[in-house]
Image (tube, helix red, strand yellow):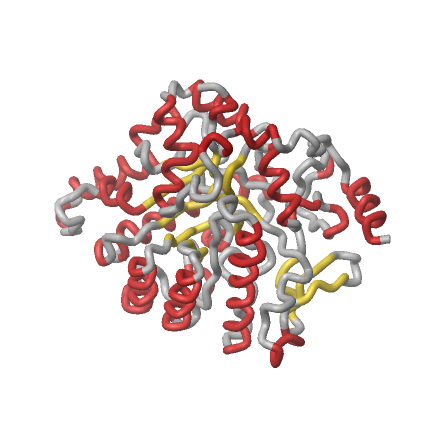
Length: 417
């Protein structure tokens, strides 16, 4: 396959929310309580919700910075590439990278709204709704056909979550972000089917995908207190494995055969081992009397789970063992793992090295994702305009050069003056 003929859909990118995102979306009676960006005493742009810091503006939003500037330290809006928080610039960066469509996970709210839920009341419900309205209408809605919208939920009350699933589905959003391991946050685990039944039922009813992004479940890794951050970053995909275990071996998949789950940033390399181990355990430990409805655990997993990867050179050689219909690609823009602006070359070289056919490449780079999310990739953009070559041809003027934090800050100051 020629690079220009690729079609790329990324189901894991990130938006750093602009400071004015709540304007016009919060009921007037609570407008003064909406999360706001303040500059703290260390000069850091920080979101505050009801007198409590909820997160920094752009943790690890390092795209185009020189690698020696990468770090865990937060970045202010002035230091970041504008496409990190500005939807118009984002689409231009997507064009330059040949990416047709993107699913953008939240930043300051937490992947599953956990950073807002220190106050569990109707005001927080209104803020969650406001966030979703902004994301669906102002972010994804600004460029139809370029984003797959994703919503956050008030999960402390299943009925509130059910109502929000229905509300955003009516707006055309059929994807929500939920915690990998809810018990880490004090919620019932996914084994507690009585608690989660209404939520799972609503997801199935509205054809909405349950997205589990690594991060919320970091607390399950009891790492050495003096371990470097490398330990957390390298071992992070193991959280996806643990989440898959809870859903596969708990009642969720058996009770809800239409439940669809997408795993983000967990990679796919752990899946062959996990499926082999699950099938062996199921067939060998018959005294446990587990019931998968006459199927092997691996078959049930493939019916319910889509996993995505940024780079998995070795694992892609085992794509049929994983499930060729269960693998999707992610760009992870604008984080340090992201592949920009040379994603097409990187992705194709890796798939070619694995011996993938053109049919398999199309499945992994766009078809599996669009099928899983029941999203028409060519509903707004004809296929001939959706390829890497066609998109890049519209963005030849986009600056893709390495740019430092200080250079971005200087440009930001000039725009503000």
